[in-house]
Length: 253
Image (cartoon, rainbow, N blue to C red; front, side, top):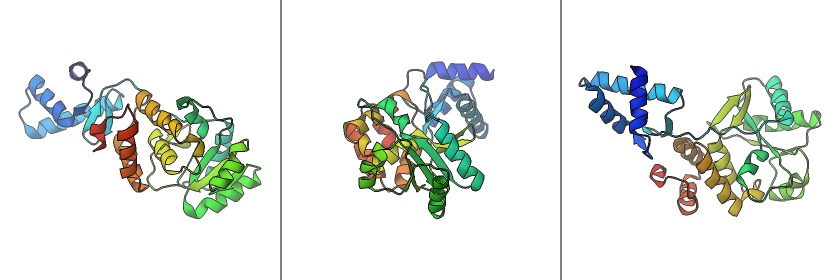
């Protein structure tokens, strides 16, 4: 019976761009004749939970969903990312951090950078400690580089690592015990930190955002909440509305 309800809902809303909780509630009432409001709310919640846990219903923002087949984005990982993760987590267990490579952005770009670099973020009080830890391990690390350093050295160096402060409650994902940023965080950071990500601005920034929204699942709430913590929410909303074709403007409200 559970599977029947799920299949009926998926079939009913398969062509809908956006589904609200109210839509699902009305669907439930019309198909299953549930009159008790308390039981109805609980059963709708369970139905939504089951569909989300199976990856069949995607949350766009609170109370707003979509049925789609887009993949979740996972940043690329390599030996240096594993080395950075192992070195830091062994020395500082349970500390908030993440690591990723700008190579993850290359799939979205027309002009391919000659080199990529790595970004390691952690708490403000441990930035210098992380810097010296990596230097001891012969890692080409740079602590809070400005645009000049990024252009002169990082963009021309092999396996350069940028160390910067992580924003609280950053949207992260952990795979194979390595903490990496979600796509929502990467997009906001590339938008905000133009000095570090100078090669990824202009038309390439549009490509990165447009193809990200086209090919991958984007949680609008996560993206906008993180942009708000970085005090760039209004600017990002304006940028998305004016420049990105594959964004749903209704969900930017």
